[in-house]
Image (cartoon, rainbow, N blue to C red; front, top):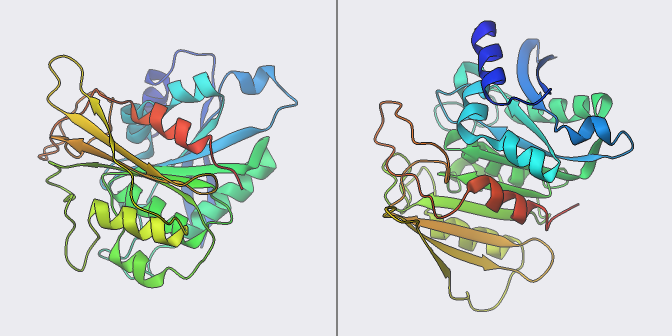
Length: 291
């Protein structure tokens, strides 16, 4: 496993670099995560850097998430640190299949990573963000609900608001929220699933209300796909200043990371849009938010 992770780390970048597997003990269990620092981290020793947590989907590993999303390239362009945590049994606790409160303490694990980052790296703790795919996206939404004082904005891909998170959401602090969902997603349904998670549009409305955004919903902006791309992106964003809420709907899009290379994991994950690059869109959104 360590050899596989090392090979994947090397495959993700040809820079002189700076993707390192780290670990810590949380709740008497050794937990791992990858930290990628951009080249500018070494050349600008007086600078503090933003941090993006990138959570893998269910059944995936931290190295696979790094390789699939290719967020390290955006980290180089925009000069931020990326952290890829590893879930226990390749999963995250969002109340599906385990007890929300008594199950795996992934929220505490995330807080422990953040505390360790503050010790080991020059991070800008006012610009800490989270994203994730599928199960990782659901978990990013849990972090938005439970740790809004620490995360300035969150982006979920293929993961609307889980019902267990909704039931336990007590924090009132606002947080920037970006939702990316494929309308043809057969793994996590755009229209939601009763007693499991809201629809994509219901999630947008929930966070709009939570962030105190009033007024009529604006008309979405359409972004056509490239030549030969059957997908089309509808971009809906609301909020003037403060914590914005955005919904990127991918017509004909599947359970995929926009702009990534298509891959097959034996599931009907569907089409990957070329109309947008998820990493570019996320950083543009994140950069508007700080604590």
